[in-house]
Image 1 (spheres, rainbow, N blue to C red):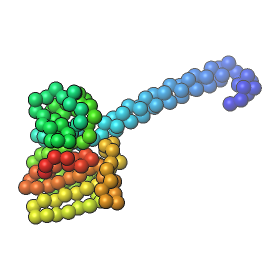
Image 2 (tube, rainbow, N blue to C red):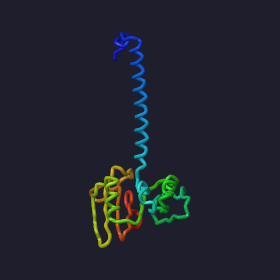
Image 3 (cartoon, one colour):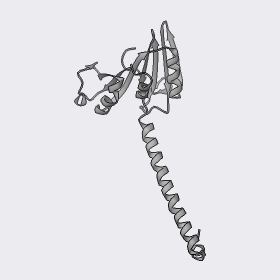
Length: 178
């Protein structure tokens, strides 16, 4: 509303208009905070979200920074330090580590669990191979904020494997065994 029109309003209407605009500013500020917090929650989206459904899953973080490792459950594979933990401690271990290059999770499951993960993360499958009892799927998900690697002509940030009732998922790839 232009200023000269505001002057022509009665005191009551002017106060009501000012109060409405303050209310709108408060609402927009509130909405901004909600969007920021929602964005922060999404930014944390990785394979650890699976721990809610698969509390028995085992987690391995792959890092090049040995200084931050405070766990005896660790091995060096010649390229990465592999830090092992269970689902309950995974968030704390992840926060304590630096320079994480990838992570893998594994748990007892079936093809239904593989399908659940593909749907949960809205994975665009770029390859699927079967070799005997092993099913291996590579894909890309915009919901996983792990830097993708190029595999062939496609970018991949999640890999799934199913072998003998064990599901393994890795971001960006399964860096350990499966």
